[in-house]
Image 1 (cartoon, one colour):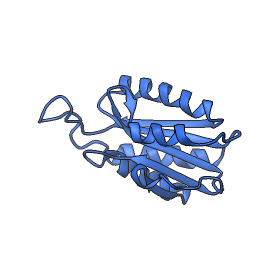
Image 2: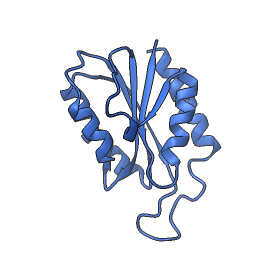
Image 3: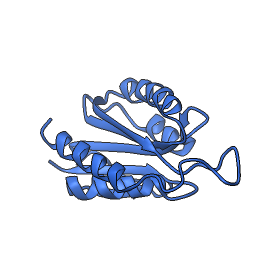
Length: 148
């Protein structure tokens, strides 16, 4: 299985940490969303899309990338995110799933964990997140994807 991860990590590197762990577990190529514009995804069997959550949405650069893709005919995909609140993450995943499904992706998994977030205050919330336990959970998630 040939895997690709496209991620957006804007502020604290939370999502990059998760992308790196999942990518290593899958032996995936890892690409920042800002570098994915001309990327050809045709040769990949599984594509992961990850981002921090911004006001209940995944980052607009990642969403725009998917919206520009041609029909994918049931290509397998998964979503992952880091967030200040799991409630916002669930909403973001639901909205992004709609975009992926419209493009023909078959979604085979989702992962989210808390991440350090300074959107509402300089001190932030979830300091130290994602932590070693979260990254271990991400690794387990990735290994489960390999069996699907």
